[in-house]
Length: 233
Image (cartoon, rainbow, N blue to C red; front, side, top):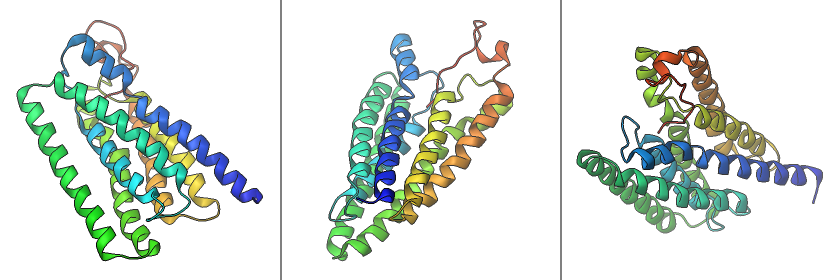
């Protein structure tokens, strides 16, 4: 194994560790939801985007799609399990309207994923073409995952409060993007991982800048007088 291969493996392992932290970063929010037995104004957008993103990267990392991508499908398989747990908790404490919306979106995502799997396996018969199709789709959903926390940006700017702004999730997004961008650059070069994760770096920076602008607004950040540091969903 050459130096570049060793370096890529090391960066990939680091990326897995950071990605695991990214998947778990909403845990304080989930704990708060369980404690209050209500989702309040938190949204399931990041979880819905993340589970779809992970599912497609698991498919991309399979040997019959993109060989030698063990680090890709193992961490994303873990991500799928974590997001299922989070979404289950979110479903339990959502309103009836919120539950219906959650189930509808999950159903659409499941149908889309199944369709992509069938088309990939039946229409394409070599890993190069399969990697192209699944890589592009995975990249799209990876970008969606990175930008999902920005769905509350308008609310943050309007209220001048970061109560529902995902600090730890945003930080984890940035670090995850940096790690996987580095992984993609090292030989063998992977354009699909590079493009979406470099966009993730930009997304993470934008989110942290927005957080920095309003995090000192203590009165607005917590009605009880304490600054909320929980990541949002």
